Image (cartoon, rainbow, N blue to C red; front, side, top):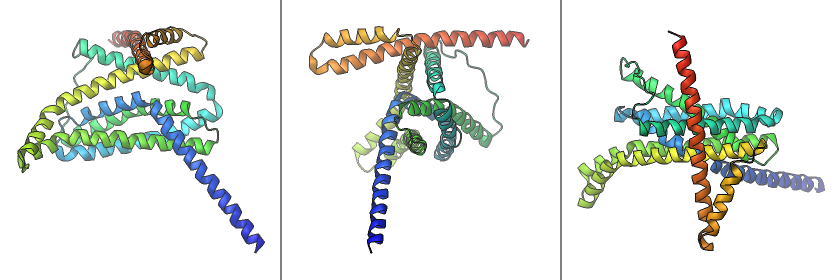
Length: 315
């Protein structure tokens, strides 16, 4: 009897330890996932354009395919690579994170350049033979784009995890990756079908206010998508700049991080105490974004120059 009681105590202790570990995994996943907000917003802002012009009946199946590809990218390819790096080459995480910051700055600068010079860098793509081929191309292109953003997201999450056990780290990384994917593509599904919902309400709504709301939804979606793309670009520049400044600090280069911090502190002390924290965050984010844009334009110039050089060499 005493042996059975001892066994039950051991089982209870293991269960309690497991529950605590799972709580730690969930907490770490949520906290680390929030660090990737900029890349997540950009992912959500970028994906709807891949279903633009696709028949309404194929929009949700396409989003589901892209979401499945995103989960494959994160869990099958990126998760094992992240754990291997974490175990055998942790020194490589910060350089990879900094490269990711440079990529975000580059992407943000390229989008700003499109605002300044519409059509910049665009080339005419070959026409698809039919709707099925167009859908396949769009899905393939979206999954390739997602891979780059997913790599950045997973690297940011990995750098934010503070647990050392490999299985817990893998579980937290996987949980955060899947959670982010569901949030992003669930939101994308709602966005791409919002105009259809609005059109339905405008046509069959029983109340005048319902029909008016439907018409407002249809009219408002193009502006909302433009706003979402703009927010995504700004978030990309902010996160990219922040990653680069932290990366420079880890390499022993304290500028421009110190200057940004000093400017944010000065701005915070110039306002009442109740809003000092918000002002400090806003100034820091603004400076990080401007720095990310500046670095992004430099990278954009280098990439454009290299592409032109190779292009001339091919003639």
